[in-house]
Length: 522
Image (cartoon, rainbow, N blue to C red; front, side):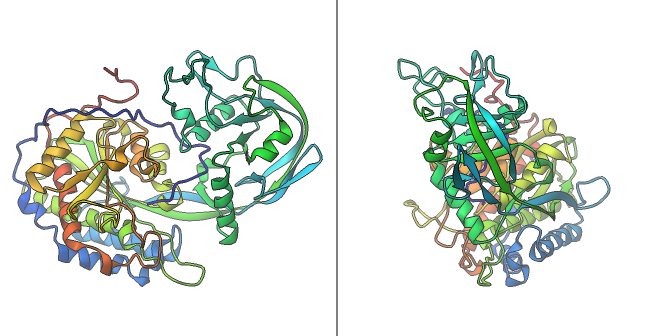
């Protein structure tokens, strides 16, 4: 699972995330008994896969590096051995994902003859050059409904200064939501991206973004990149000429001293020089995608996903094996594929097509899944019924207070009431795992809902479930090794995902999406 990204420019729009408790039970479809096929998912097979997939031979599966290439070949070989074909029409299991790495920038910006060094009072993750005699202050940089910070502003070819947060009326309510609840514009995970996209759509040359509360996090991330000589990886399609400079209080107030108290848009005269330079390196990586065609509704797709990459080798040569993150999800997906193929070979193939999607670049910002959904969806998104995403299901959260037979579920109710109820009923019928919805809370400070590959499907109004065991002391460390996996739990959790996919794939009607932004809320 990726660490929370702090660079949100270009982040896509979030889905409706309202949550409702619905007590009516789901109707689990009566189909051929799936238990014999689920029982082919065993501890021994999972362990055998994982001791290879998370071994030193795979060098931590760093995106685009030799270890990741070994990983994709291992996955491909498994599908070939099962006789499950590639998803692409040309028979290639690999979906190429063109990536670029922006090397750590160097330089400074000068504001009215005061120089601010990059990494101190200003942060940027790409080149930013040029001289400007004015900037356009657009307040919070929001436009929604009748509210617009851009009214009567022409920002074409200009630098736009905006600040984090959103406006509040005289009664203390947030103007966008019309209530005491903040809107998505205040969400750190999405707000900067929405504001940046909006400014860019209006022709802005660049964005100067002031966020005093979160600036230490941006600065810390920049410092980490610089110390480790690691650039920011992005999709090649994301390359943009739009400038993004993140400001702290000192640099922001050097441009506009009243930025904290004043919201009204205006043109600000200033002597601003951007002297930030960086270079980009191209990286080759790939998703691995296989498909088992449906027997009755082959043009409707149930996607089961996991990420194949991890974080590679430390500066001192230690290998981050990533057994739980996300070796556990990767091998679970292999076993689920085997179970579905056994059913198909016995004449009990699923009604809908099952897509087995192993994505790259998750640790770099959900890049492989975003390439699939935003750039090159192999199968139409409007015909995609669900994404069941597996990311870390082999361990026990040391902070968990209940019995060990648990699993965190995230997102099951955010778009489809029916999916949530079906998930509950399937679990009661087959696996009896204790579901914990702690991290499904919209106010979860960990923001896990936004931190794994399901999110790129959810933002496209495709129902999702994110299966997750929580973090632990070995998370993103060389000590995340296959000997520490709880294989009995991994077996039961993997079977749960299989059973859930089985029921969804064999329903007479596809899942109803009743909580999408276009749906009417009661």
